[in-house]
Image 1 (cartoon, each protein chain N blue to C red):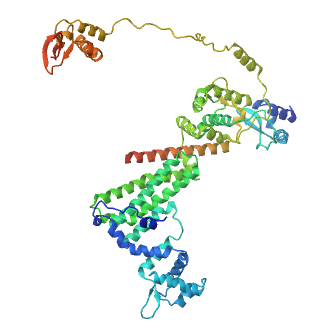
Image 2 (image 1 turned 180 degrees about the vertical axis):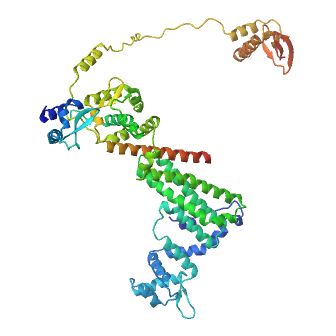
Image 3 (image 1 turned 45 degrees about the horizontal axis):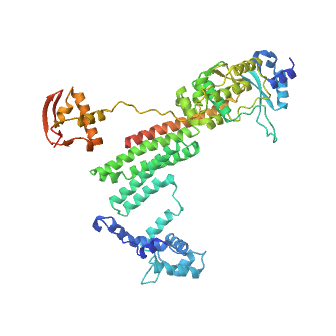
Length: 182
Length: 404
């Protein structure tokens, strides 16, 4: 395949990592990246697949309609999957497995305030967009989720965990003090 | 209307519940002349000028001044105005005039008050410095010979401030602002350190009152407050500081159960913020999987809507005659009406066994409650009769009277 063809495919979808051995060649990969960068995309590897994702979101003119729009619930669902499948093993010193999955029931527990069917619909939408993978009730990270900036994502997750631990510890300590006063 | 007006407008007089000598009032009244001096300093539109002149005199080493010398100490005010202010100060007894050489001097108590005002000239006391400020006030009170109850009251005020800080920390736990929590943590930690220092500085005060359990309890309570509230505040600051990441890597691992709890606390918006800007919509419209689409269509076409049973037509509700089985009360009323001679209540109810006797007795009471006017007279006797039949040992000696 030529660099032009590979770039064209990545604009339309994802490629298995081993489907395009030419990308191992630095010159070839640079040409693909330049073609993608010309339309605001950046190549990334996630869940064993090559994916072209947008760089920093651009200011869109009024009336622009994206094919997909991620709303807060989508992002929250992606964060939950990331925390379960990537952050939790990473902070325990284990490399996250590419084929790791969590059950839909586990995910639904976090979103217990929403109807189960609604959460199922979000999972389906995110699977179609390439953010999630897996089949049936087994949910995996899709190429677009696996390709997020790991450093920033981990920093944010650590901050959230730190904040959670602080609140829990302080609540426990001050709770003990209140009990002792009572 | 200010407080002074309220006192003069005939509001009810203040009454005490005990002798004045048993209240803090005598000590407070003794302090009033000094406090009135303070009032003379800070009241009125010329107060800033008076204070400025007093501060200038306080800071000058001479100790005695002629009016001209005072004017030189305040070069930014016109000499005639300085003279006016000096006159004010003298009339308010904030400046004394030496009878011999006619020079002015600051009375010792005015010097103490000016020093106090200078110390508080920052305009406000930051919360995080409050315990330290109260600690210095304690030192001042002790140096001025204040009573031990006043010193202890000041100490308790510092403890209350620390306890309030703990409450604030507890309230901020559920606030999602780390910045607010950390700021409160720093403030409480500073106050806890000040409290620790205060306990050290005034150790002799507590040692001198070791025999008094009240002082011991207060000291113990303060130590516990420093340990718990101060400890929690220190933890907040450490974990929310930049060094927390390092500490977290060693001690802050969470398991899946804690992760679930954390995510529940974050909510949808908090979770979404974790990946906001890190992932984006796909660059293109994804191809729809034909097999999946057909499968979904098949599922949809086979789905039958729920069919609840039809509601019955609207019409009047069927009426049914009441049951013809007579109630036990009515049966008992019939038995009572058919009595031909006077009969003790015990004979009427104690027929089969204890349970039946209790039921018949209840029916009898109910029958008289409902149909008393149509039944033979019931002669109530406040005595107990020996029955000894149908499982009934004793019963009321009351009797149903039939005939004249």
